[in-house]
Length: 75
Image (cartoon, rainbow, N blue to C red; front, side):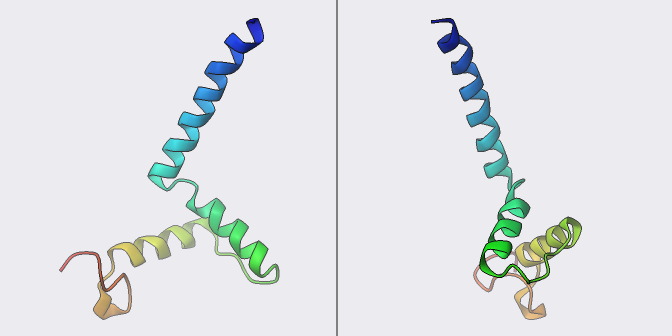
């Protein structure tokens, strides 16, 4: 009984941490690295700062600049 009382809050905390990192995109870099290494182990992996810059440019960049999505973003 005592183990169940201790395990439940730990599971809840782990789930909450997972949910927040998924929601905020905090673990996007980890997913990128895992995907890159799984699909092509010899491919170079961007540093975290470069990855975040590229991700931000794609999200907020103008489609006319060759950045961003032609379906999203501003103006």
